[in-house]
Image (cartoon, rainbow, N blue to C red; front, side, top):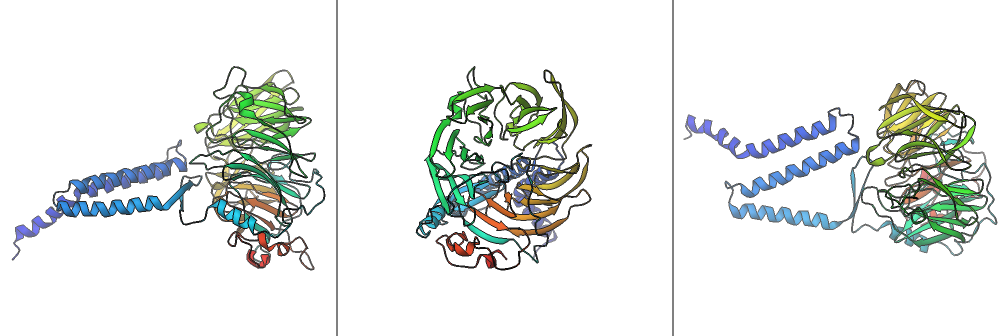
Length: 565
């Protein structure tokens, strides 16, 4: 019969047995909650999640150590349980082929029994019907109406074209084509009926042209090159540029190639890192080539280089020879762009050291506004207003500067700076005096003049977006197409649609009412304008069933309109 003393001592004995693991768990939970929610201005969401993961791993190791030393449990039992746990851990690790990470450092495991992206791509292309590689258009001629470079001709993400359908429940996006593609984070450049991009195909980078109407491969130019990075992922990052019937494509390892738009035949190639005597940056070359006049301008950077290494380099379009190079900052991940500042044409570059303006005629650096970001990750494209004001943003926050100058002396002055818009690598947009951007994955509207926040709502991850009229077309990190009204009054999401699968960091393209989207696994084209009266156009994907769906990479028949609904 239990005595009063035994009844009192039993809870105390149980507590003595569990107090160590309970204390470990309590400390771990407290640290994880602090990492997630304590307001520390310098910690972004990705860093917070890494702290949570490290804390959880440390807690598990401590619990495992306590279990092995727990003498209240028989040694054979402890070792048996430890053996089972170790076998499960080894099996779990062995089953994972590779792990990719979202922009917030959430791991996405890919298992060994899953077909790889290269396997799906090769199976799909092998099943294409005979003659699929033949051009469906006789000749490609580029024009200013084309979306022929990164984020459009002005690189501002603003699209002129037909009004988009606003009610996707009544008129959902209509699938034109959908198919697997190679790896990497480049977007498309559209010109002359061709959609040009650059992909990673096993150990080779490939510049590829697709028919915009069917998605069929028209030509491929591949060469040995592989940039591999565990956190960001493998493959090229920079969108090709098309100008005057030529394609200029920059790979992640620094190989810049000029190709004929019609045939894909190479005209010249140069490694800009070797030319500039510099090493690559942590996440690879990501700045799309800037083409104007008779020049191609790229940003290899001056990091870890020789005395004559420079930040910006200009090459001759005719043969790739060096024309000029200027600036001493390291490369960032933004793309050089042309802008007219105080009446003078300049090259703007948001590099590892901040924002700089270079004379477009000779390349000399005219002014510089220092801007520090963690790991020198300056990615988002600057926005130019009124010929003198420029908005920049990174994971460190945002700032509006105004550049004063008279042609011989230039001075950038800060108008405001805050941390209300932290564009890690998502490009912001502007309309009617307001700025819209993804602040660590959440859509934000700021007043351009004051920097004050009007609203913050809508989780779209580290995606990208374009402005069409009064609509934001967002391609979320989850591969969704989203319509949001560009209004400072409130966050008003009109529609959302699952468009492609997989982590999506690539910028969308919108041309003539069609959205061309891709990530490192698949690509697709959707019509977003109101449905025209009469039958579907002949260009619809019904004429090309072998490119309609990644879910059927061998090319099963089906109705693309039904697949989109």
